[in-house]
Length: 218
Image 1 (cartoon, helix red, strand yellow):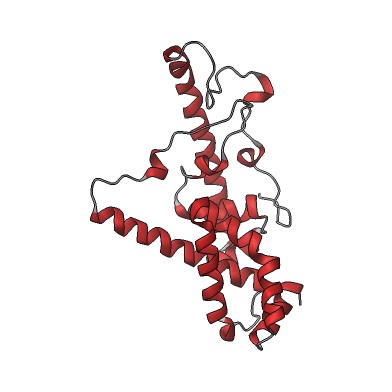
Image 2: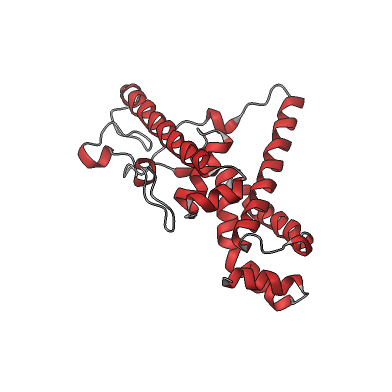
C-alpha cells in the first residue's frame, strides 16, 4: 500500500491527522489538474470542492485503485461539473463568447509558449489526457483509470492533442509577420517571427516526452 492510500484508509476510519496528511501530499496535483482543466483563477475553489467531495465519499473508498487515482477521478468530475455549469450560463446569455477558444496563442520574448493558453485550443477529453500524462506525470494506465476509458484511448487523445498544439503554434507563427508589419518594427511579446533556429522549436511538452512514471507511447 502506498503512503497516500494508507492515509486515505486511516482518514476513512476517522483519523484527522491522516486526513491532513492526505491533503498535504496530494494538494499540489489536485490544484494543478484543476488549473489546467478549468483555469488557475478557479483552481483554489475547485481544489476545496474536490476535497469536500472526497471526504464525503471516503466511506466508499475500497482500495480497488490507488488513492491517487481515486482522488484525481473526483478532481476530474469536479472540473467537468464546473465546465458544464459555465456552458449552461453561456447559453443563457447569447452575448457571451467562449473566452478560452478565442484566446490568441501567446509567448513571451524568450519564445516560451504559455501552457495554459495553448491548452485552451484542446477539447476537454484531449486536454484532460494530455495534462494527466504529460504535465501531472501519470502513466497511461493511471490516466485511463482516472478517465474511465481504455489505455489506447488515452494514447490516441494524447497524440491528437500534440498535433492540435503544434497546429496552434504554426498558426501563430503564420500570423506573426502580419503583427510585425502592423507594429513599429519592434518585436512584441507573443511574436515568434524574430526567432531563429532552436528558439523557434515547439516547447518540449508539445514535442512529447516520456511521462515520469508512464509507459512510452507507441
